[in-house]
Image 1 (cartoon, rainbow, N blue to C red):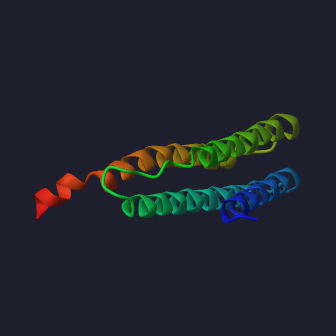
Image 2 (tube, helix red, strand yellow):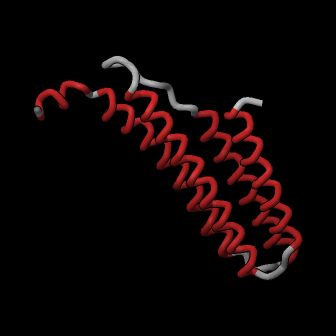
Length: 136
């Protein structure tokens, strides 16, 4: 299994675990903590992906850049959407307080969208070699 496939496998496993815990646990503080932990894991995933992309871009000749793995970000957005739908279902069916889940998964959307924007800007910074020469 390639590293990228293994990373996606672990992300899917974390999503499944989080979804199961949200469904079976009833304490709102516990599920909010699990949701924030999941959001942090995805944030780390996005941050490391951006760092890897920037490193690979900086090793390329001037003017060349590494394409973003947008499918990974789209997959993460879909996973957050699925967990958010689960939270809505839990709230409406079982009348449990899941406000913390809305906040956590909403922040997850912002983290992913921020990662997409940051990826484009990071690539611009790294491939913009003429400014480095002007600074010298």
